[in-house]
Amino acid sequence: MANDFLADQMDELAKKLLKYRISDITERERLEFLTVLNKLRRNGSPVDFGDFIKCIESSGVAHNKCVRIKRNVDSCLQVDQIKFYPHYLLCKIFRFPTANFFDLKDVSLCPFGISKREKLLCINP
Image 1 (cartoon, rainbow, N blue to C red):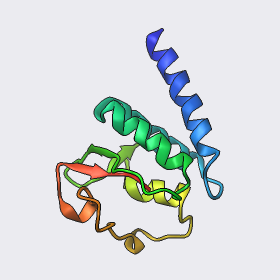
Image 2 (cartoon, rainbow, N blue to C red):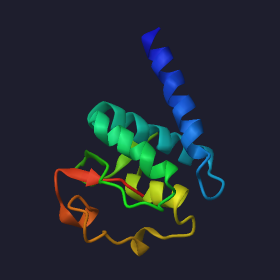
Image 3 (tube, rainbow, N blue to C red):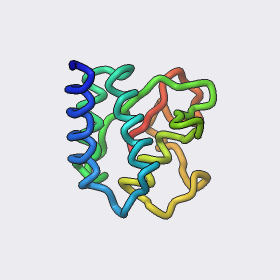
Image 4 (tube, rainbow, N blue to C red):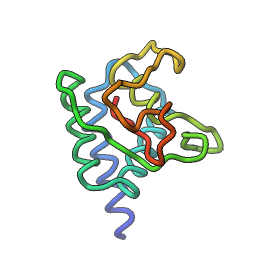
């Protein structure tokens, strides 16, 4: 019962946040987004989760703090045996829908960018 309630809450939060998306997304991208939310809820701090919501709702207008998740060996998450980069997915959904993975660069102020190889990875779009 508790898992069903939590899943419903995450779905509602995902729907709320996806209202801020720049363009349409596929079902696969929606599932990947839910995976990122769940990982952030499980492994991130409550502050990171709150900061993530603020980052999305601000639409990139305000400079927000790093939103960190635990980095895997290859910096990827996985849905149905298909890997994806969470920071790229969020940039694609919420900021730059036509961006390529190789177009992304770390912000100089961010100590947890993908090129920094820290134990945590910043997923702030």
